[in-house]
Length: 532
Image (cartoon, rainbow, N blue to C red; front, top):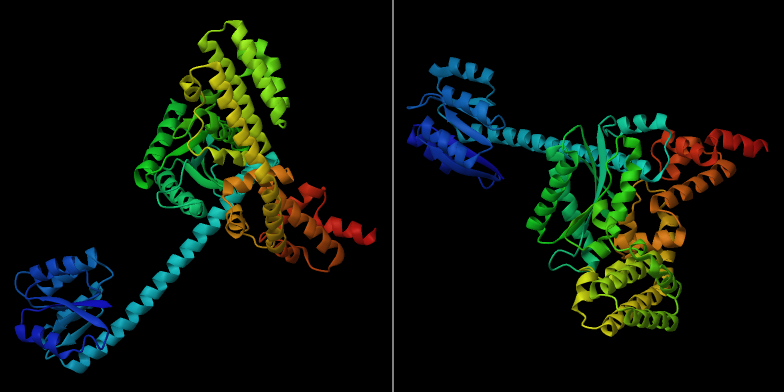
């Protein structure tokens, strides 16, 4: 409902307008009136009306001066001048200032209604145009995001010819000549309070909105999503204290998310590289850092230094054999328990210090857990608050207590792996069927599939990579290109038509992918197949 304000020093005019015009029937609101220009300006500031009826000749501030102020401050407000015959020359001047129309005294009901109807039509048109403009901007924004997302995924997962990297980056509006680049991966440690695992997308997108706003506002880089987590492509030309500044900015993002969403997050930080074409190296280290949350802890920023110091076999070479035997026995509970007993006996007879025992057990437990993560990465979901290995070890009073705790932990992990084996097959069947039925959709994404099969993105990624040996992007690309080969061979469709049918809106991009996969263009492939 549009709001109307009337500013006139004559009481009879104000009362007449208020009482005679059927505002509700016209679906308009008479939001207030004022007897002079100064009070009128205060009323306009308070109400922010859509239409102002304004007398030219008023005390304190005349209509012409008020018109100039309103035009400069509130350019979208429609101004209608109220004037007498002897002020007609002022009205013509006011029209040049951008007022919508004028109405002569004495004012009649019919004239006002006709004028209001005309202004409402104009306001409706402007609002619709504004909505269309917003929709167009949002569509362009989404399109740009998808192009950038696709380009970043290619840079991370695919080998792109050096000559194409700059071209793709320019097309996606990604800076290609910065001094430093890095990937940071952001994942939540637990859901927003009140949500459950079926609503994890809400937590994901809430984090995404905060990260995108901060990164965009400060021009720190670009945001993207990969394998169910939020990512930042960070870039800068700063030459001094680059890593310190980088961590400080990530810390700021982490604190803002915790403040607004009341959850904790973990950030895996990738190595800093000097070329956009090397961000796959940064991604690999960022992903490794995020996986090591399982051992390092949650609610933190993990760099290579954070987990490079974790216990490993090189810290106690004499125990390497026991570590290997433990890992070899991981699929046999009886054999695993036997090895634990042997470790216990060796420790009891070695007269090791308590600190040394903790160090060795730490090595063995970390190796065991890492092996389980390799078997099924979704096992991390067993420990939403992270395993505090050192803390649990130090809380045990005897070696026997440690051995039993380690075995209980092993049983918990082993049972999980066995329980997941059968459901994972069903999930995978549903995933592959969905891809087969929807591969032609350009926007096909992990989020879309997860919503359909009711899986969390992190769990989806773990079972998909384990079953197929490739990432989701790689798998869908291979599937689409195989379908394209069939169409090239058995149909008369043109290349651009085939590209669209297998999910690529850009025929040139499709041809580039095809040639990279099969070492020949679609046209060359079709010619060879037809001519034999």
